[in-house]
Structures are given as C-alpha cells and as structure tokens.
Image 1 (spheres, rainbow, N blue to C red):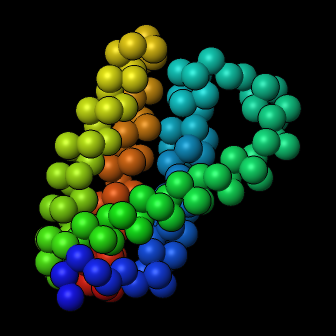
Image 2 (cartoon, one colour):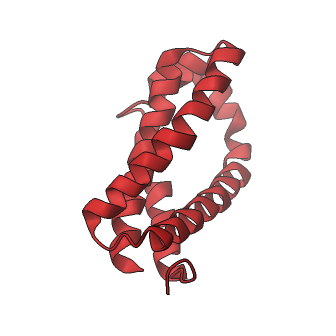
Length: 138
C-alpha cells in the first residue's frame, strides 16, 4: 500500500546510523575541530558543556527518528524500492527543503558558509544513507 506503511525497525536502524554518522562527522578526526572553531567554542568550553551532551544526544535522536520516519513515508509514497531510487528521493528532499532552509538561516544569522557546508554535508550524508536503507527495507 503506497503511503501507508512505515517499517519502524528500519526507521530505528536509520536513526541509529544517523547518530553514528554524526558522532564520526563531528569528531576531531573529521570536522569536529573546524566546526568548534566556526561556532566559536574552545576545547575548554566544550569540556565544560559535557553535562549537556546526554540531553542533547537524546533530543537529536528524537529529531533523527522523526526525520527518518518522514523520509520512510515519502519513500513509500514515491514507490522507491531500490537503493538508487532511495538515494534520489533523499537527495531531492535535502536539496529542496534542508539545504535552502538552513542556508536562509546562515544568511540571516551571519554564520560562516563553511559552517553551513559542514552541517549540510552531514545532513546530506545521513539522508542519503537513510534513503538507501529505507528504500530496500520498507
């Protein structure tokens, strides 16, 4: 049935993968140090905020769960059943909704375009992985 089925196990797996990708993406090995510099945080400030990490991670998990659920719903609506179709669906949703809205925020807040690229690279990768997974697991 198009538009009515969402596999919650697939959504949960997609959410867990999003968290893992985020952990790696924002680690010092990838973009963590550059991201910290661009948001104006020092290592000392970051260490002080560690107590916020658990609630922030839980809220991020919920946000990615919602995003994965909606992506799964749209993938089902689109009838995307191959990895390629899932990737295309995720890409177009990112390009049409995520990239422009976050870019508008970047313009008006005066944040760095480099920060936008780091954050949106993360969003794109997560959505592509989710699109591939959800398209074949629904």
